[in-house]
Length: 246
Ligand SMILES: O=C(COP(=O)(O)O)[C@@H](O)[C@H](O)[C@H](O)[C@H](O)COP(=O)(O)O
Image (tube, rainbow, N blue to C red):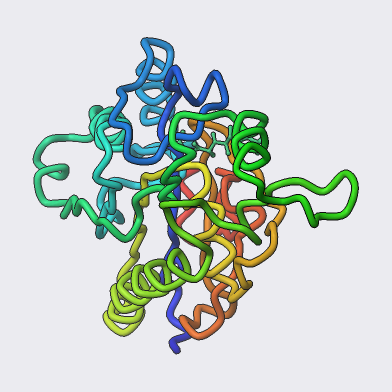
């Protein structure tokens, strides 16, 4: 731990922009669909506001130490759009890593289905008949047939989080700013936030994230052993006089 006045390392996570299936509510994991035209506009605009050198930009390009991206096209396209307005001399120095550990929860047999359709499918297969009245399929508790259950997701996310925390530990030691950007999907990013603060994934962590949504994780007391969800993370006004440029 250090008391130096470097900004505390952060993870800025972004769910990819709108797709036809995020719009319709179909479960999308391996299906490699692209953003809609609106999704493209959404993420280009988010990039301009989020990343830049004026005080209203939350992320300064030089502080970006890594960008981790899900292998799916909608996430990779979002990454390109977010970084589009960064000076190419800086952008070319930023490691952009495609990482399988942050791919979407594998939905298996439920790929492409809406929640109501999954409930019907399971009923037709004789599943869930012992549930209490009003209770239905719940991905957290029940997982996905032919896909992943919460323990699979937990294992890969814990590995992913260790990679980020090693980058951040080094940046604290070197007393340099470090923003890691993670671009992925609805379920996996909610799981990622839950695991960041050591919550189990066998129940709904009750977090919301729309397509195009942005959130921030960091550490209390500038200490990688104290990961925290940064509730005011997206507020762009500097919180201390030092380093403020207005
Ligand atoms: O497919 C999902 C996320 O993938 P991506 O669009 O690549 O981020 C899921 O999050 C579904 O979009 C979502 O769970 C589904 O629409 C069910 O919604 P709900 O029944 O309201 O939880």
